Image (cartoon, rainbow, N blue to C red; front, side, top):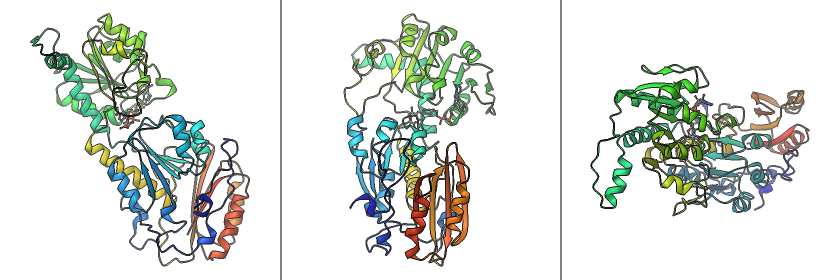
Length: 473
Ligand SMILES: NC(=O)C1=CN([C@@H]2O[C@H](COP(=O)(O)OP(=O)(O)OC[C@H]3O[C@@H](n4cnc5c(N)ncnc54)[C@H](O)[C@@H]3O)[C@@H](O)[C@H]2O)C=CC1
Ligand SMILES: O=C(O)CCC(=O)C(=O)O
C-alpha cells in the first residue's frame, strides 16, 4: 500500500528548504480497520493512560513500517510489534548507501550509536516521522535537519548510565593493577607475578570530566571505594558526597590520578584531550574514555603512552567503529589501531559501556514507548529536537473529536492562521511550543464530522509555514 494511503504523508523531495508535504492522511479510510490493532499507550505516560482513553485511528497500524538496526533489545521490538507495526530488525548498522535504500520506505527507524543519520541520508527518508535512538548519545543524528523536516527524535537519557559507571569502576581497578596485561600474559602461558607499578585505588584522586548522569553516578561509586573525587563541567553543579568541582579542566588534569571522560560529542569536545592536556596530566596517571571516540586525540595518547607519561589508558569508544561484530578492529578502520593494540596496560573494549541486560531492556521499553506515543498520539514528551508537547487523551465519550498536529516553521502569524482554520470547530484544548526554528502545535477539536476532516487537513497543509500535518481521530 502506498504511504499516501496510510495517513503518513510523504516528502516531495529531499531538500531541506522544501518542507512541504504533498499527500494527505487517509481520508478514504475513516472507518476503523477490522485488523487495526491500536493499543492505548503504557501507563508510564501520565495523562495519556486513562482506561477510558480513546484509541485514535489515523491509519492502519499494520501499515507502519519500522526498521530497527544495531540489535535493538527484544523489549523494544515486542512493544512495537504489539502495535501491529511491520518490523524489520537487523543486528548491525548499515553503510550509507544501504541505509539510504532502506530508509526510503520506513516511517520509524530505531538505531543505537553507530548508525549515522546525516542530512544526506535523511533526505531520502521521505516517509520517516520519527527516529528512536536506543541509547543516550544523539550525536549520530543530524538533529537540526530532522527537526526542520518534521522528524522527531527520541533517546533514552539515563537508562544505561549506571552500567557505564560500573564499567568504569572495574576498569579503574583493572588499570591500577595491570590486570589486562597479566590476563593476556597468562593466556599466553606466561606467569608474571609483579607488584611494581600496581596500586590500590583507595586514597587516589579520580578526575571526572562531565558530571552528568554517568559522571555523577561514577562519583558516588568511586567515593564508596575510598577515592577522592574532583570533577570539571562547563555547568555549575551540585557536588555529590565530598566531591569537588574544579574551576578549569587544567586544574583537574593537574591533580587527578585517574581522568575519566563523560562529555557529549559536540564541537567543543572534539579532541578535548590532546597533546597539551596530556602534558598537563600527572606523570603516571591514567586516562579513561567511554564517551565518544573523537573526544581524545588518539595519536597524541599513543605518544604519551609510548613516552611513559601515562601509566595506562582505557578506551571503550573510537572515532570509527565497525558496523557489526567480527575481526574488524584493524588499521583499515583507524590508521593507529595497531599502535594501540601494541601498547602495555591499555584496556580496549568494543563500546560496551551501556551493554548490559538491565540497561538494554530498560532502553528498549523507554524508547519504544516514546515511539508509540508519538506515532499514535503525536506526543513529543522527552523529544531531543522538538518542543515537548502533550495533551491528555481523548476519551471514548468524545466521539466527534480529532487531534490535529501541526509542525511548522516558527514564524510570526502562524497561530492566528491556524486558529482561523480550527475556529470553525470547537477547540477543546490546545498546546503549542517552539524550539528554535520549529514549532509544534497539538489541538483536540470537537464537533468534527468525518467529511470535514479532509478540508481541515488541506487548509492546514496550504499554509506556507507548514512542515508536517497529521490529523488523528
Ligand atoms: N560507552 C558507552 O556505551 C556510553 C557512552 N555514553 C556517552 O557518554 C556521554 C555522557 O553521558 P551522560 O553522562 O549521560 O551525559 P549528560 O548529558 O548527562 O552529561 C554530560 C555532561 O557533560 C558536560 N559537558 C558538556 N560539555 C563539556 C565540556 N566541554 N567540558 C566539561 N563538561 C562538559 C555537561 O554539562 C553535562 O553535565 C554521552 O553523551 C554519550 O556520548 C553514554 C552512555 C553509554
Ligand atoms: O549501546 C550502544 O549502542 C550505545 C551506548 C552509548 O554510547 C550511548 O548510549 O550513548
